[in-house]
Amino acid sequence: MSEDNFAHPEAKVCEFIQDSSKWNVSKLRQFVNNHHVTQKIKGITIPIHESGDSFCWGLNSSGSFTTKSTIWAAHDIQAHNFSLWLYKWIWNIDTLPKIKVFF
View 1 (cartoon, rainbow, N blue to C red):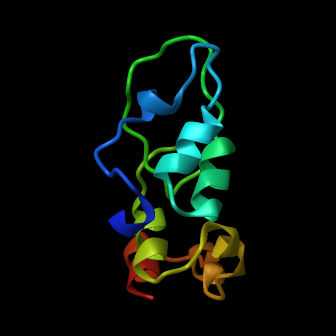
View 2 (cartoon, rainbow, N blue to C red):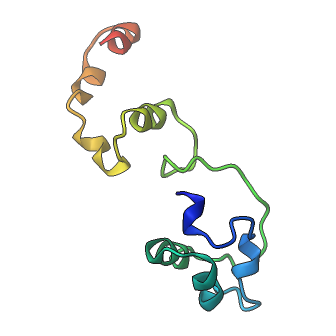
């Protein structure tokens, strides 16, 4: 996403959250110039209770970093297409792991 979609790229997320833990949609629309992005942001649930920041790998549903998800990203394959990978059979071969990796 480029900075062109935002009227004020230095804005912080907390500036768009109301005291009621709801998105301030009118303010969000003033700063984000892309309707699709605004809709995505509105779909993010704001936690009721405060929680600390944490690291999260966005390319894996568990939030954990994996080499598998990195390889898929490198090949520009979306998460919903993981099960469509044609070479999944390789991992079922009865051979040494290094041979599987070689394949």
